[in-house]
Every structure is written in structure tokens, then in C-alpha cells.
Image (tube, rainbow, N blue to C red; front, top):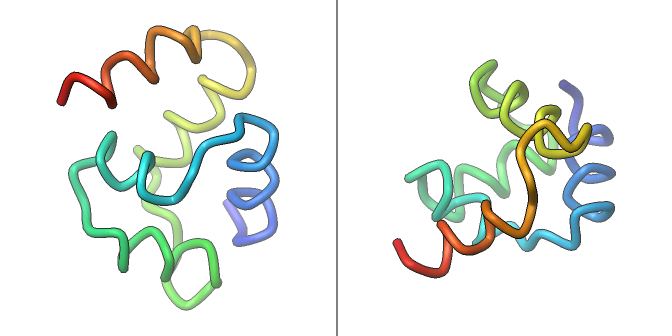
Length: 69
């Protein structure tokens, strides 16, 4: 997954970088490095984002998980 792809998915989902950081249990800096292209997006994160983007995981359920974590 490229930086452009992760940014496009985050935009479509209206997901902030901090939301992804909380969901993935990583730092906001890590997400920033992925979205800027400085670091490659880890495969599990790419799989998760694609699953959410393709509605395999309901985004409302996911956001509830972020809010309660």
C-alpha cells in the first residue's frame, strides 16, 4: 500500500491519523510516517484498512472500538 492509497482510504473513511494510531496500537508518528511515505505501511494495517474500505468490517463498529479503547 502506497502513501497515496492510505491517504485516500483515510479520507474516504473520514478517519483521522490518530484514530488509526489508536486502532492499530501504534504512535501517531508511525501513522504519519506511513501517510507521508517515509515508512512502508505494514501488511496487517493495509489488510485492515482495505477490509474497512470494502465494507467487510463495518466502520461504525470500528469507530465504536476506537472510542472505547
